[in-house]
Image (cartoon, rainbow, N blue to C red; front, side, top):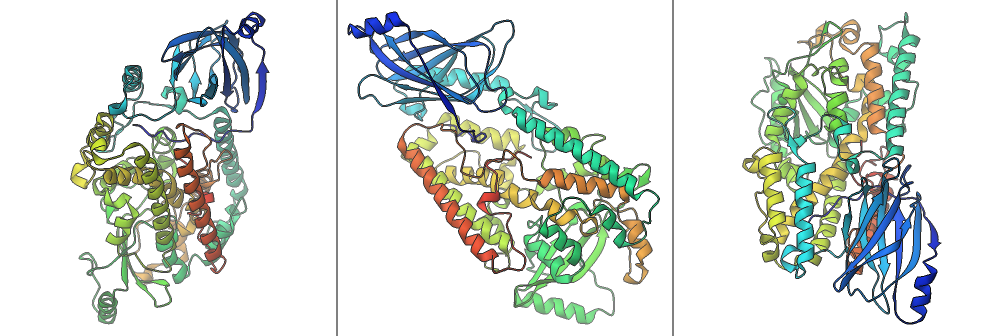
Length: 625
C-alpha cells in the first residue's frame, strides 16, 4: 500500500445540478431503471477546468454502464446529477472517464468523484487529484485502501499492477553527481510529470518573487555605488528592506556571546551541536593557555562542555567569484552550558573552511542554485564545485539515526536541556507524527505478517535504500520491513523530515542570515591566525562585497518567506481513503497539533526570544520551497 502525500488546499466550491435525459426519467418512473447520483469535483486552481467534454462510466461487480451525459467541467465547481441505468450494478469498483479533445487538448484537474447508489447503499468515493490529459480512458478505483493479499477481486489487483508499471515508466532514477543520492530523471521542471509540477498560481508567485528579488539586488547595488564600504555599519545600507523581528534582533545582538551560543541550539542549523565526551583531537591550544585547558577539562567532567565542529569543510576548494579568489574556514567551536541554560563560547579555533547552511536540492535548486553559473557559483564560498564535494561528505555521514530526533538528539547529548527549544519541539512533533502514522498503519495492517508479506512495500523499501540512497544499508537504513513498528518508524522519519525538519532549517535563513555579518556567504581573505592581527579593515575586506551581500539577503528572503498557498501540516483537503476510520485518525492528529500549538505559544510568551519554527501553524505539509 502506498500512502500518497497530500497536495494543496482547495478553495470553497460551488455546486451545479445537471438535468438528465427526459427519456431516462420516463423509463425510471415506470420502474425499469436504477438511479445513481454522481458528483464530480473539479480543482480550484487556475486553469483546472476544461473546455473539453468528459464522458463517464460506472463499473460495478454486476456490470458496467456508460453515462450518456457528457460534462463540461468548470474550475472550483461540483457537478451533481442523477442518472438512471437499466440495472443495479452492485458494489461499485471503478469510475472510468475520458476527456474528448476538441481542437485542442485542454487539461482538466479532477479532484474526486463520488457516487450514491440505489437504496441505502453507502456513497462510494473515487479519489483522483490529478491532471487528466489526452483521450485515453482513465480508471479510478473506489477509495477503500486494500492490501494485495486482501484483494479477492482480481480487477483491483490487475488495475494496481498496470498502475505500477505506468509509474515505473514515469518516475525513473537519475544520477545528478556521483556519490550523491539519486534524483528523479528530469533535467528541468518541464521534464517533470504534470502532476508533480507547481500549480499555475504557485508558479506565477515563485517567478514574480524571483523578479522582485532581482530588482531589489539591482536597486541596492545602485544605491550603494560610490558609497563607503569600510565599516560594519555600512551593511545598514542593504538592511532597509523586508525584515522580521528576529532579523532585527540579530542585527542588534549578533556580536553578543550569549546570542552566538543560542544560534547553535535554536538557530537556522541546530543539527551541528553535540555534547563533548572528550576533548577533540584537533583542538590544539598554544602554550600559555593552561588555564583555559584546565577550564575545558572541568566543563567536560561536569557534562557542560559542547562542541560544533565544521570539519566537513576540511580541504573543500574555495570558489572564485568574479575573478576574485574566496577563502573558507572550518572552525571548531567549544561552548559551555551555564546553570541558567545559556550556551557561551569558550574557544573558536580556525583551521580550514566554513559555511553556515546548505540548501534543499530539487530540480529548481539544481538548475538555479547549485548548477553551473547558479547562485552558489555567484555568491557562496563553496561554489564552483566545492559545494558538491561538501554534499558528498555530508551524505557519507548521513545515517538513519541522524534523521530520527529521538536517536539523533540522544546521540548528540541534547536531551533534557531546557534552553534547547528545537530539541524539545522536535521530539514533541515526532511523537505526534508517530501516533498519526501508527493509527493509519494499524487500520490496514492487522499483523506484522501483513507487512512482511506486502511485496510492493518491501520492494519500495529496498529500492529507496539500495538505489535512491546508494547502498545506504551500511548507514542503518532498512532493506526490508519486518514489523508494523519498523514500517511506522520509517514513515514517521519520512514525514518528519519533509515537514518539521525542513521548517526548522529553512525558515530561519532570513532571520539569521539577512544581516550578512552574522553568517557571511563567503570570505574574501584567509582567516586570521591571531586575534591581534584582526582590524576593521581586515574584517571588511573579508566580508562579502555589496554584490554578494545583496545576493545572500535576497536568496534568504526567497527561500524563507511563507508561501501564499501554504498548506499547514495535517490540514490537507484531499481524501485518499474512504471510510470514517482514517478521518478519525486525521482529526486526532489535527487535535494533537493544535494542543502543541497552544503549548508552544504559552511557552514563547515567557521568553525574550521566542522559538516559532516548529509551531505546527508554521510547518508546511510538504517541501514546496
